[in-house]
Image (cartoon, rainbow, N blue to C red; front, side, top):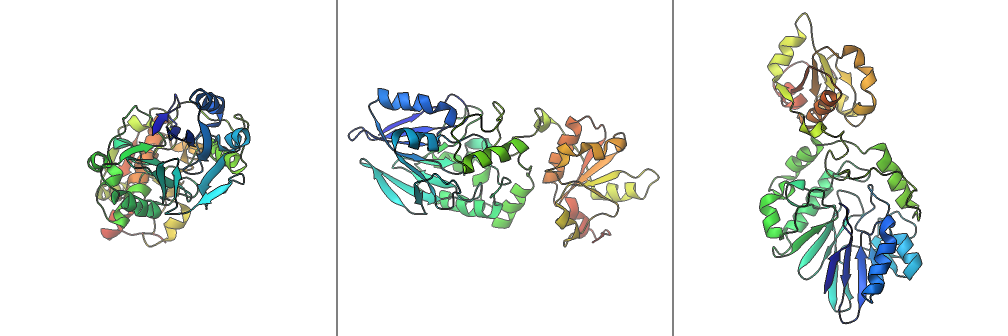
Length: 360
């Protein structure tokens, strides 16, 4: 088997080919590098049979449609992929051969509805379903993402043979591929936890897509052939959790405040601004909300800072269900220069369990 990673940047495009038949497959090609791929195929005297996207990408424009035009290869994606130019749709368990190389499709949704993992004899190409080491996995807060589905996919990956080497769709910090056995000990997304605990873990890390990612998705839905069909920033770890936070925001150290102190402060002469960063429908759910809280979802906070600008010098307490999104919100506020920001420990879950009053 010929196996190479072709891209210079963080997006990974894998060339797989059978030495004897010279049949080749490209996985997750990037449009701006299509000419480079065609030269590589020609130099190696390989015939491109399949081009595969492991999912609909939100951080780069796929080269799949352009490669299909140039080589008349099959453009392969999962059956739930929305792109109109896909010529061959696969489902879970589909098997084929590239020359003498067996390839099996494992449906691994969660990052997107159409995510798949490719299983080869000695390695797996996981797309954004699984990254390496502390990078965890692709975020589940993009369109079509679902933390529960991702937990199910992780269980399927955990059941694969441990000798398989993991090759992800992105690598932002020069981590090296290693076996699934090693990833089980080093990757936080592969740690044993219940489905609900996993959902809470991921939902606590939410930060919605940057606006430019939505334009990239539209370009991929439309099978764009122009690399400039959507503006894409350079070297942004966009598919990692919090990858589109402002540079430096992830490095902010956030102060925590216990629920008891928040309750006392709200009864004082100078009560803090309680900023509830959950989605609006959650405020009337079973946990309710703190009376008088200002609601700006964490996914909108960076664009709506002007709404709380008049209270910049006030103490601000960020609140969510359990603390994860509130932590992200506090980082955004601190990056914007708000001087007195705290995260309420345990979020509304802890507040409700303590029997403190809530509004519904």
